[in-house]
Length: 335
Image (cartoon, rainbow, N blue to C red; front, side, top):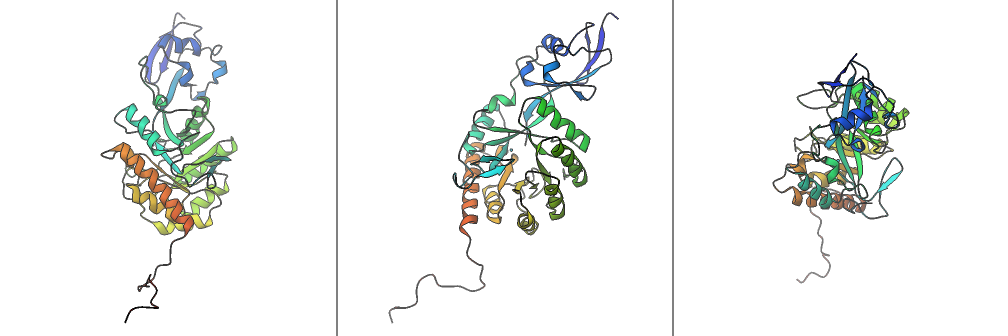
């Protein structure tokens, strides 16, 4: 055979016999440090690329991180005495943000910095094979921020598991945000598939943070299979409707032994504050910041709202009463 016929990221490509994965990447001008490679749906370990030969008919996927929907800043927390603990790691900030939907990479970079977030989410997609094209990782200071790969766009447990394995091959930490979408229109998560994927990923050593409906029963099951946190929605993704069902969230928080992080539906700073005042341990958002008229100012507002909400929860609000109670003493009133 004079040449190999490969399908690379869905497109037909020809290569010389004996071509290895490393050689293929070089010929395409792809930076090997920023991609993961899959052959016929099996991840190829980075250490074997130089020797991993390709065969005629192989289907190759070359993927990288893109912007996606959540040491570092101190925003979103209440100080060193009140850290957010995920998978044994401590974070000062209780605000997690996504990296998608910003008008420019520079805007995204600045929003991350102003938010004070320490954890930022990224999605995994086929790499753009245009040489030298900027990557979302260019916006993230890896010395200050923890990257949280997510499985956005996955509709089956199998695809979500596959995506997490590719993210691990990219050299990012094993903490992942698990999403398995059940409906294309509402983007509501598929609870059964999420639970199935979580069970597999936990056994493989991943620190799993699953996105789910505000269902107390499912939340408990996800915790029982070993998830490091549970991330119920407040409202549909990107809707900005805020906390639609605070009562379910309260039940989830009361029964949980792991952190509860509101994920999806936050529209403005007051929504974030309400979530924290209910007792949630953190808030993850993307659209609420990136879609604001002034994303940089909104990033600061969200940072401050999460801090205020957490402090209010720790301080303890006064009881609600039907009638007034005077705040000034009645003794000694002038007659």
